[in-house]
Length: 326
Image 1 (spheres, rainbow, N blue to C red):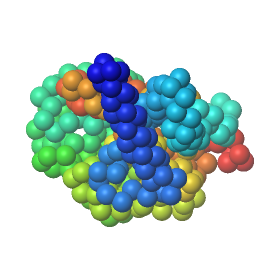
Image 2: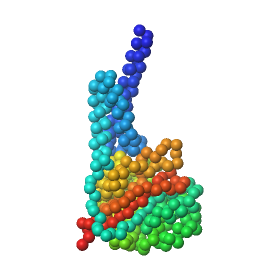
Image 3: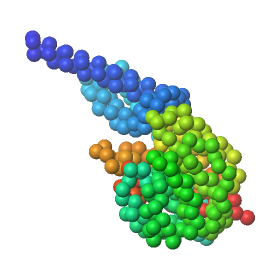
């Protein structure tokens, strides 16, 4: 009797725990469905959404085995909601075709990490990418000294440096002529410029947004500012950098609704990750993005290692869409 009672108690605890997990995952899924981030804690939890789906799988299987049909049905319904949210990553919309014979403009973006002491190695890694433009966030005065003294500086004669201590600095280095536009009202420095690309001018907006933990309101404000850029894009436009946001944040999906195309999602790599790179925890979320609008399309996208950084870099090739050419 005692052994049977112990098993019954254990089964009850497991079932209660399963209901708690389903309730928490369900609540996070509802925040996605209603487009609500609410607090920094909710925003952080939303980055885990695809992994929460995996947590539900054993709960559904065990519930069915134990004939806890209501628990199994509720857990399955929550999982179906998450799967529905992820459809654009699994079945992305067919992107516009690039204009034939376009040369493409190749841009690499790297969060250097403000504490990085391996920037000399970063310079070597960036030089091997053969990019036309570099976007460097968390660009500190110390990083500037090292990079300006490296052979990389001679390869990129057109440089806009907005150095700053901590994570607030940013720079754009280009092989091709650029024209700097008006400042954008963002929490950290951002750079809005036009690059004289091989297929025509491209507006490039280099950004590094705060984390929702550091400044939740500024993070949401910057994402909304970015969405405004997408809605008003009347020229080939690329928004690139560390957005500190993932597909699983409603405000990030608002960027896609505003007209931006996520290069990774379009290439079928929407589930790829870029952070963190220097922790015990393996990278589990993509925070670094390349988004196109205004008749610009991504033709190739990938990641690269940034020595000493906590982020992977993203490199993308963009070209005018066939529909925008005369």
